[in-house]
Length: 115
Picture 1 (cartoon, helix red, strand yellow):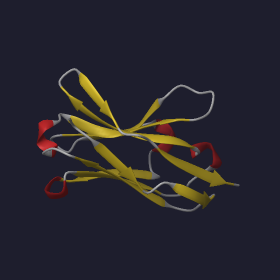
Picture 2: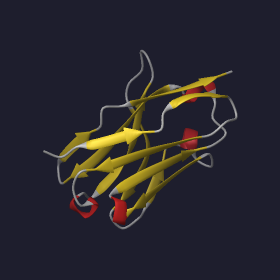
Picture 3: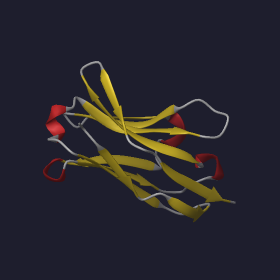
Picture 4: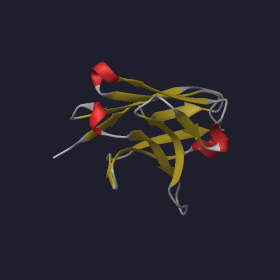
C-alpha cells in the first residue's frame, strides 16, 4: 500500500518561513503528479501547489511568488518551501499523489501562522 509521509509543519510568525516535505513509499515516477492541498477550519480543501512528472508546476494565486514546490526524484520526495507566510495560510496541509484517476493522500500536517 502506497504511503505518503509528511513533515515540516509547525507554528511560525507572520513573515516567517516553513518547509514541508512529502516522501512517497514507491518510485516517484509511478505518479503523474504530486503536490499539496490545504484545508482551513470551516473551509473547503484547496490546491496549493502541484508538480507533474515532467517538473511542470502550478500554484494557487494566493501563494504565487511566496511558495515554491520542488521534487527530489532520488529521494522520492516533494518539497514545499513557504516564505512570507501570512495568518491566512494557517491550515492543515495535505500531500497528494495522483496515479491515473486515483488520488492518494497524506495524513496532513498543521501549519499555524501567528500575527
